[in-house]
Amino acid sequence: MQHVLVVDDERDAAETMAMLIADAGFTVSTAGSLRDARRQMALRKPDLVLLDLHLPDGSGFALYDDEVMGENTEIVFVTGQGDLESSLKALRLGAVDYLLKPVAPEHLNRLLHRVSRSGVRLHGSHEASDAAAARTPMLLGCSPSMQRVQAQIDRVAPTGVTVLITGESGCGKELAAATLHDRSKRRDKPMLAVNCGAISPHLMESEIFGHEKGSFTGADNQHIGFFERTKGGTLFLDEITEMPLELQVKLLRVLETGTFMRVGSTQLQTTDVRLIAATNRDPMAAVRDGKLREDLLYRLNVFPINMPPLRERPEDVEVIAQHFLGAIARREGSAKRFSPQVLQAFADYVWPGNVRELRNVVERAYVMAAGSEITDACLPTQQRSSLPVDVLEPDTPILALCVGESWADIERQVVLATLDYYDGHQQRASHALGVSVKTLYNRLRDWSLLPQAAVARARSAMGSLRV
Image 1 (cartoon, rainbow, N blue to C red):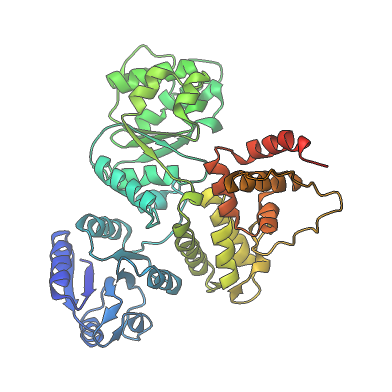
Image 2 (spheres, rainbow, N blue to C red):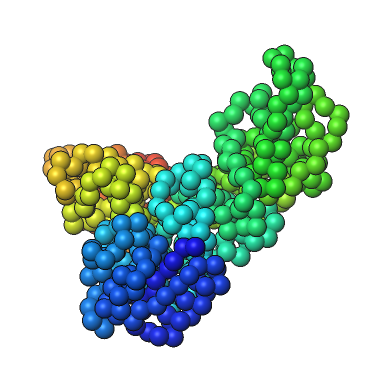
């Protein structure tokens, strides 16, 4: 039986966590100081330590490299709501997770569930399509938008209702689906993730529903489809708008009746599958464009979850980057750290590719760093915080401004003119304006101008302003 040590000087908090841990099927002991913790670990090596950072006889960090700590012991730090810097330091040291005080029972239960299912090895691959990640998914982030997503997942996971996940590419829709499955009653059954855009439209029906031997040319054997292979589990259909409309009709029937037929068969098959769908399109726009049947949308959209893009939760960027860096370091056997300039560059960048782009940048930077510190020079050009800005040429456009014009109008004209001058390059335009890329992006968003639209608008509007 796995053993957990709770190190917290607040007796009531420690006893409450111990009670929840015991109810989850673990053995548990408590300690109120570093000295008590060392004594407890000498008596029995814990598999998991919940470690408070602020103890009467020192910081919880002092225990991290202690010789009494077992080699296979995993540490989860417990920190205050406003102590984000300590949480980041914990992740840099190699902590597998952190909990915010006061510890919510559902968050603790979620952590213990991952421990019991993963043999305490909480960290690992972050591809939700990977089998290990599907067993132990981790949605990182303490921003309000991610807390809202976590609360939605906690609410809907135990039920059997259909979920539609929306969001931009790379923002973690598949990971959210894996988390849903992991916290559901179907977690001991298989989960299958399918990208509808990666399957040929001619083969999609056969792949999803299966086919009988001889049902079409090349069907030399009976084929079991996704619905049968995930019986009792979860089927995740990503990019659902890429599914042919005629197949969407059959999918709707499965959702309504729980039955389907293999290609070339007349025998009804019954299925018990929890369906989760996802798309990076606006669902209603996809309906208007003829990419998604309206009746299927209503059947899928029983419980919608929207994954926020990374640029809308900048406070999560460093946490996620540190987590990726720690995972790479454990895999490669060599620890590295980000320089302050790199962390500032991460904060300034708007991450159009979202978490997927961040992970790729961290992996590349790790490889490029010759020593133990990842510097600005290790980043791709577009993520660097100090790009050179071209000196303005003599034919730089001049704005014709009117006396009495509002400051907001002047700001708008200057921003659009600068963006136009740099051919829509937001990084260079932001440096010329003396603001961060995030600030520039937020201005364009406030004006209801996407970056591409802003360039077009500037080019058409600036004709009369050049002299």
